[in-house]
Amino acid sequence: MTTIVANMGGVTGPELAQTFNAASADFERVTPLVWGPAAQALVCELRIAPGERVLDVCSGTGASALAAAMAVGPVGGVHAIDIAGDLLAVAQQSASGRGLRNVTFEEADITDWRGPNGAYDALACSYGVFFLPEMDAACARLVEFVRPGGRIGVTVWRRGALEDYVRIFGETLKRFMDTDGPPRRSPWEDNIVRIDEPASISEWLRELGLVEPQAVVFPNYVPLTEKFAWDFVRGSGMRGALLGFRAETVEQIRSAFLTELRRRDLTTVDASTIVATAARAR
Ligand SMILES: C[S@@+](CC[C@H](N)C(=O)[O-])C[C@H]1O[C@@H](n2cnc3c(N)ncnc32)[C@H](O)[C@@H]1O
Image (tube, rainbow, N blue to C red; front, top):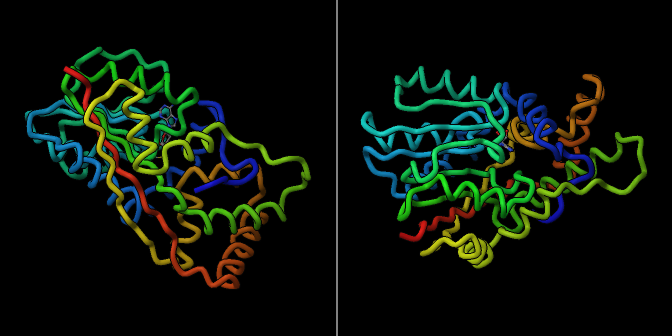
């Protein structure tokens, strides 16, 4: 994904919380096709074992937290943190529905969360690190929560992922915006492109002081039904772009976007992802 679009989503913690809270009712629609499969891949690559303690950050509705909770089993435990409480409420409901008692959820900004240092066997963050302002410093701090020899795993978009879909959405959106000013580029867009290839994310993990970085590509080409096309806008960070528009205008944006996707004959969304892991030195 190169550039996203003007004013798509917030920049500060409270703005991001507002964006993702707004998406809470729709987030789970995207889970079976995007968030869920990547979360399973992340838990698998992290080699989560029964009895382990896992810290899951930027947990959203719990895709990786719940997968990790099933991997650690009843003796292990997962602590899941997100800045958007409405998403965590959905996650808590899913955990209860599955009978999972080994996962706890906490609403907090992970950049200033004070947790126990060295207490976790593994840290998981699926599609979250790039949202953290001062990404490197924030992640260096997160690493401290993992014991020496423990593992850190993240998923990020692979270079080129979402590109056509997001560009068409951005172009559509622009027609409804009354500003001709320069697009506001979010810091997280810069973060995304810094770590969107196996080599660059492995290097980034090394720069965080981690060892044995591994990055695998998880290809995921989602068929672009009209339902998915709009669910993905509503159930992701793109939702932020719709905040502030009246309901009638949002409906016009939806209709124009779907028309444009048809006109350009886009049939697939490339949601390919990199699953990267590394270990904290002993
Ligand atoms: C794209 S969603 C991914 C959610 C989940 N990991 C998944 O894969 O389904 C990004 C998540 O990061 C959370 N987030 C962003 N900045 C955060 C921060 N500073 N502290 C905690 N959570 C944050 C958002 O609220 C959102 O739930």
